[in-house]
Amino acid sequence: MTPLAYLAARVASAQLVSHVHGLEVWEPLSPFVRRALAASDLILCVSRHTVGKVVDTAGADPDRCAAIFNTVDDRFTPGDRAAARARFGIAPEATVLSAVARLDPRQRHKGHDRVIPLLADLARDVPGLTYLVAGTGGDRERLEALARNTGAGGIVRFLGFVSDEDLPDLYRASDLYVMPSHGEGFGIAFVEAMCCGTPALGLNAGGAGDALRHGELGRAVAVADFPAALRTAILAPPIDRAALAARSRAAFGRPAFAARLAEATAPLLPGHAGARHRTTGPRPPCRF
Image 1 (cartoon, one colour):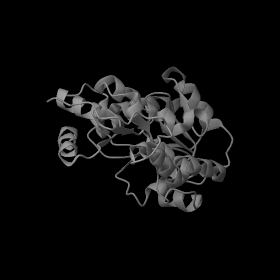
Image 2 (tube, rainbow, N blue to C red; image 1 turned 30 degrees about the horizontal axis):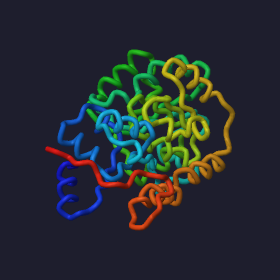
Image 3 (cartoon, rainbow, N blue to C red; image 1 turned 180 degrees about the vertical axis):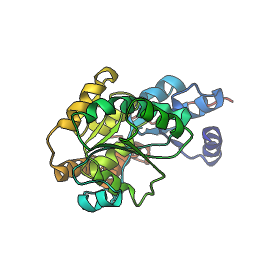
Image 4 (cartoon, helix red, strand yellow; image 1 turned 60 degrees about the vertical axis):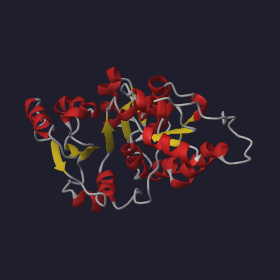
């Protein structure tokens, strides 16, 4: 819709702000979209990785781009862990991993098939190991077969669709949220889990590093290091879940998001000096 938005902005003599996430700007763009996006007065991106992609794929001016990260609402907080486990039929002594993502054959970058082959070996040292997979899609049958063929058929539980109201309890019931995805624009599920007090593990690829704060909140590791990191995370002693939730909320809650957004958009306001020294001159022409 960016070309249409560009034309509307020109007609109305308005400034154009575009907001981009991840995959939609990670692939080559059509000339119309690329030119209109590059002509935006401001491009809001959910991660620094996406900023780099917009600059590379659209030729956007980096001074007109800002990473503002995503935010979470107040539902994602620590809660009654025992009740959350009972809700999902999990034994109190079980060690629970979880993942929340579409099981789409076109989005196998989510990393379920990086986790499943490791589970049978891990279960020898971690009795009661359970991997809860929330999400629907056409890739479920393949992943179920992978679990059976790697000896993890009794470890993996495919939950199917989990409603928004049940998601906080899924995170609270988990000991570790794990999603070794190499294609996240940001990775909001990491933040949701950590705001519920659950440790998170992902890859240092795509935008996941920003969601995990590059080790400050969750762990982001290289693909080659993931098997060892998963074992270490599972066997690690319990953490202070309330403290993790508080730090995650401070980093990604609504006040933090509002402050980043205000800072990014301030230079567009009439008479503003430009605290971030953003280039605020006329937008470049977009010739279709």
